[in-house]
Amino acid sequence: MSAVLRELLRVSEKAANIARACRQQEALFQLLIEEKKDGEKNKKFAVDFKTLADVLVQEVIKQNMENKFPGLGKKILGEESNEFTNELGEKIILRLCPTEEETVELLSKVLNGNKLASEALAKVVHQDVTLTDPTLDSVEINIPQDILGIWVDPIDSTYQYIKGSTDIKSNEGIFPSGLQCVTILIGVYDLHTGVPLMGVINQPFVSQDLTTLRWRGRCYWGLSYLGTNVHSLQRAGPAGSSGEPRAAGGAGPEAGQPRGLSAVISTSEAATVKAAVGRVCGERVFPAAGAGYKGLCVVQGLADVYIFSEDTTFKWDCCAAHAILRAMGGGVADLQGCLRAGPGAGLEPPQLRYHAANRGAAGAERWANKGGLLAYRSRERLDAFLGLLIPSLAAVGTPT
Image (tube, rainbow, N blue to C red; front, side, top):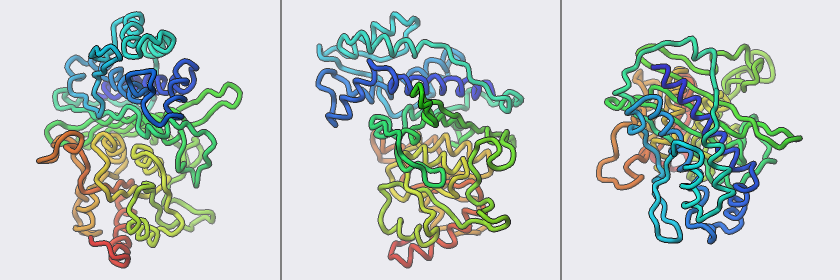
C-alpha cells in the first residue's frame, strides 16, 4: 500500500499548487487582499475566501484519492464543511467536477459570478501534477486499504497564508511567522488502533525566486508499519550536504560540542510553561506559527521538541508529523501523560491516537488533543527534556 503514499505525495503537490496559485494569480490574490484589509468576510462574496481555499484543497485531495482507490475518499476527514450558501440563498456543495468547465460553473455559483477567479481556480485544480521520490519508489509494503483512515488539514496556519509575509527572518532555521509556516497536512492512521502509519507534510512556500516572485515548496513524508520504517530525510547525506537542516542535538559550532536542548512553542503558550521551557532550553526556545509547521521543525531536526500545553490542537494538526516522526524513531505524545509518568520510566511515552473521539464533546472538540502534546524525534532527547522540565514547572508554580 505504498501506492497510497505515492498518490498522497502527488495530491499534496496539487494542493500546494492551489495554495500558491491563490497567492500568485491576480484574480485570486485580490480576494485575499480584500480579506486581509477587512479582517472579516468580504462583503462582495457570501463566503470567506480563505475557507473556500481550504475546502477546495480538501475536496481535491478527497476526490483524487477516491478516483485512484475507490472507497478511500469516504475515510478522509478534515475540519472543513464543503457546503456554502451564496447571496441568492442557494446551498451549494463544493466538489471536484469531472471537467474544468463544470468546475468553473460550480465555483462561479459559490463566488457569486466572479468568472475570472473561478476560471483561475478551476485551471489549477485540473492541472496534472507529478511528484515522485526515489526512496519511496524502492519501497513495496502491503497495508490493507480497509484499515486506513486519513486526517487532512488543507491549509494549516491560515492566518499566515492570508497575511502573506515574505520578509520574515528565521532564527536558526525556524521562522516565527510568514508564508514559510504554511503547511498542507495529510496523516494516515489505523482505523482500529489509531496508530499513525503514513504522513505527508507539504510546505508550499519555502523559497521565492526574486525575479519571477514564484515560490518553490518542499515535501516530507514517512511510513511506519509492522517494523518497516522509511522517510524522506533518509536520502540526505551528511548534515547540511543536501540542503536539509542539521539535527537539533547534533554538533555545535565546535566539533564534539553537543548543543543544549531546544524547543519550538506556540506564541499563545501559557506564560508559566514558557518560563519553565526557558529554564530548560535557555535561548533555544523558538516561538513559531502553525501546529503543522512546528511539528515539521521537529521532523527537520531544527528543534528537539514541540511542546504545547493547551487543548486547542486537533487530530488533523499532528497526525502527519506523528507518522513521519514515528518512522524516525520519535513520536507525538500526550503532554499531561508524559508529565505524570516522568522521564526514563522504561515505558513508551503515551502516544496520541487518531481513531476515537473525545467522550461527551461536540463539534471540533471531539477531536481535540485534550492533554496537550509533546512531539519529539529522539527518545533520548525527550527524556533529557522531561527530566529538566518537570522540576522547572514546579519551580514556576505549575502543577504536573
